[in-house]
Image (cartoon, rainbow, N blue to C red; front, side, top):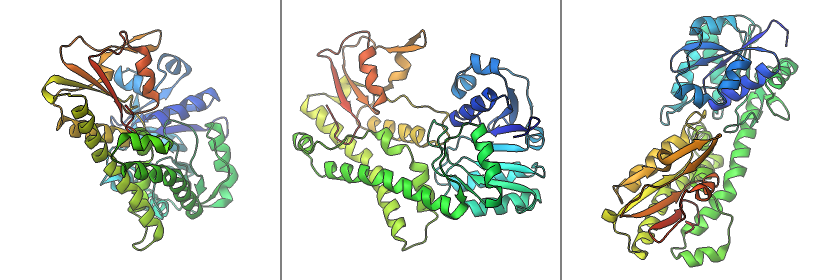
Length: 385
């Protein structure tokens, strides 16, 4: 990267902020754009020291010197595309629309890194959209790379570029953002590797999950001693799965695999709600005399919105069982950067639902111990209790 090159991180997401931090740490002039407000600000070491996460900037409504979106795009030749995507049915349409709009301001010589998951063949479509909207030629006027990131990290799932003659250029730029990757391929191979990694990740999870679902007796499920996965583990890459179910050809065995994974995840909520009802019945917990506290520390600024959507979905389903449902994050206090949790005094039975491995630590930070008035169930493949 030349000393006078500057970078635009298009999207105030957790992953985008991580990349911004790395770029600034490497003394690279970096601007981040809030895709919701359509304004950009230059990220400085001072901003990074005062705001450790993208979420802290959003929640505190921090005021910085800003510049218009079109200026930020046209004046920065290197762009990392990291917006927060919250659509499911219109996922592809939303991404393509955003890229089409920003491409109208692209300058000749731009290097565009797409860090958002796409399906098979969809990156070639993206290149065509950029060409149409910008009037630039992908062979001579701009470079396109596919670099989807793992949630909340700077680790790439795969790395592809539409012209391998530019391989060294995009690798050096990715390194400047401290992005972790192995090899760089053409777009088609990178999409196939993405599909392979997602399939390999979910196949053992779904196999274990479906085995446990078939056993209605909790004591029998415990005998299997399968590795336990929480609802958070199931939703980490839902966007990636949906991308492939919407892009693979009918009859493709990979489509059957992806569709099966998606159906299994969709059915997990029903399975858990049935187990919740059974648990309440066994412990004589009446809906009218029970308070539920959902424990799921979600990062609402991730690129993928799957956890946010699943969080809302599971709350709706639990609400059909118990009307009094609360988010444990509303009962937290922070001291020296460490959160501790409490439950209000109540004459009702209190039921905690843990949704991730990380949230198990919540139990250790309670200001009062679990007592006879408090119950616990885990939203995992075993439904631990």
